[in-house]
Length: 501
Image (cartoon, rainbow, N blue to C red; front, side, top):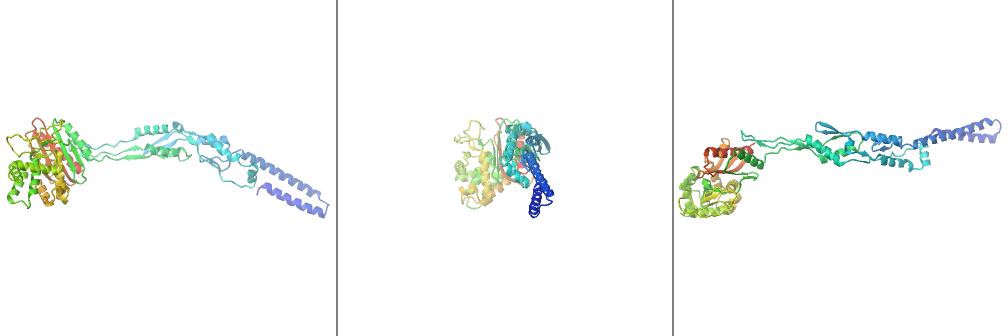
């Protein structure tokens, strides 16, 4: 209870006793009368002093009031404005990883709407009844503290430009994988990081609107290492070929037999079929066999691949054509087309002399942008051979793939595996084989043209995954073996290192 009220209560009790005594007796009342008068005057004076005190307090901001989270209760409007301006002009501390920067609010035209916030704050004083508030003051009844939210603005474009400049100076770009020229190993790149400008702007906006803890950890995103993809492998092979200053054409096909990803360099180019065409000849031979090959046929099959005998391959063609090698070649072509190999054909046989070859047109040999002057009697493309080897692998693993679908009940899983086993026995210690470590199995067939073309097509069974690789090289002038064979081996090594890095 206030002092004023206590005085009033005492005076009231004295006056009451005085009147009671007066009615009983009149003598010796002068002292009591003056005492009562003095107490009443004291009460009035106390009320006046309380009123003056309240008027002084009422001219300031309400006790407990906060503006923009800054306590301003009991301050004058001018002092409150100075306090708000001082608090919100302090810089925002920015952390970019280990680097620390300071953003001055003035740099982004930050401005507090102090006038409007103070006007809102002042309404808590002017909108309440003076005497009602005075009565609450006398009885020390407090109201809920008033809270005025922040009203501010700044230039988003200036903040963005600030962060863009920061990112330009401190972002670290990842380095892409590259080829080690000596080892032909793909060297992985290194990671980087970059400032997330949009996210950082949101966090800074919050820091600009609070009076304390104006510290921001900027959002920095890791830029992941570009793991070598099969396309990156293609770029590196391209770079390798360009640095050789090779004047001919190199085609490369790679198929990841686990994921199905495929790499093509100079796809769809028609090349001479070479001895690589012996792979479809062996496949066709197994297609027409109803039992395991007899000893004589088994020798022909083995000789065609392991010894790369043209004579043995021609005999097998003759068997496919019921004694006519040309018919056998036609049967083979038709069945390769059934498998989707539209650019692969045989219109003759190996070592054929004389005669005018038929004109066989394919999408590949009709191209006008590239011409390898392919053998008119037998042609293929690296992508066709890669597809055939992929189908052969699928057939050998689970009896699936196009071979098992197109030639259902004609070629078994065991026969496909027999063909792959046979191709694995083709040992030449060069070309694709030279690009893989000793002990890694390569099921392949290679071939040489009339001095202008070499090729090798196979399946590599590597620790890091099985894959198909087909490489063809052509050059208008004579293709030196000393230059071309190491080129194929180097490309093979790069591919092996990609799958086993």
